[in-house]
Image 1 (cartoon, one colour):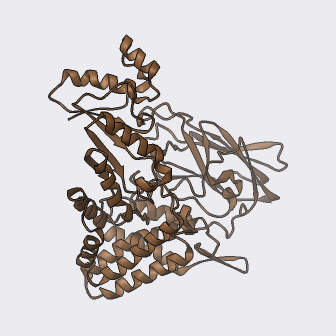
Image 2 (cartoon, helix red, strand yellow):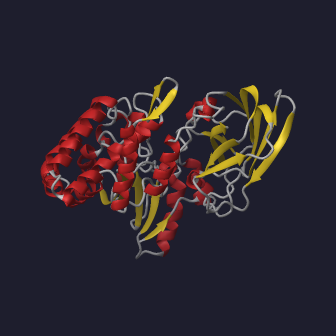
Image 3 (tube, helix red, strand yellow):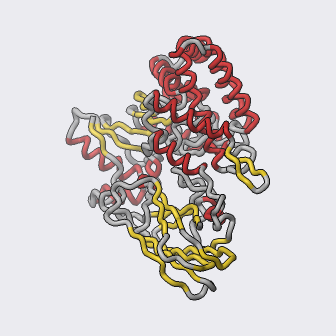
Length: 493
């Protein structure tokens, strides 16, 4: 089988037939199918596969795929909490798959059953697997790619891969029976408690019918199926599961692996509520005290990942070690002796309101951003910018620090340079130092600290002049695209 990807700008052919199809078609798929048919005619003994994906998902009106053209229809935009056929939000896909079925008997369905941004987080979609596969089969799909998280440590990776394999072999199996058989066989006496966890998790998302996104963050569900009350009950199920197999090292380890997603969600939600009820710290008489249970969870999570050689926690390849290190950095709040804590910052231009609502208090809340740019980071796209901090008091200080993030798969680069200036009156500034990052940033640490300690002297105001790369480097798969700079905590001691 050969594959033909999407063709940029439909500039592949200037013939009259193609021009007419482009003019007549309401769907981008029309001119693509015209081109693929021409390729298929040259190789009649080959199957030529092409994507009906996002902008080209709608079936064409005036042209049909050749018999040896395979249509790879993708479900990437859909909700995962409900079966496609009964979800009102999937109406457009229902029409598209029906329309493709009218003109092609060679449909390959690419489905997604995993959270790509957070492989290790609760993702309650087990109840949709059979209904969706039956729906695809009914609509003339003769090949499936069920993309799931089959790696060790990922959310129900063993169970989900097993269920999907059984369903692809026979879509009419009794799923409850197959699932119970697997849980009891794989987890032993703990299986019944894991089943209780699955049942409640499923019940909770079915109550709300909320959108379950393959790139969603656990925080999006912090008031629903990942509410504080639900988390308590889920942990009770896992406590019971661990007790049930405490004398069997193999089964106990499997239960601990299964518990990782719950722990991960608690840590991620805790990061957005650092000093609140679900956060990492208690505030007492002006002091911030790390909760021992939350700190222990971070250590246990990494220990289980390390012992089981868990490779990554997300599609971008973030390792458990990197996640552990950035989380430890995140919960190491900068409050004691930090004169920037809860002081006022301004920025020009303002950061994008897509992230942390462009809330500049993020820069001085004492919390250092971890690996996830969506939490406790502020971002600027393809531009230079300035940040000014008012410490409110003129004083002799010893050090100034600001950090940036590196996540190339998300188009995020460290800045080219950061210049630090200080002022007594907020009008006249003197230069402290400019720190630069040389080269094309092919490999960098997740976070970069820009620390200034030389000849600082007395001041009240701090200004950072940040120069971004603005465009992605030539080595990047999206070279030339606009790059981002993300900034987090400012610390002054």
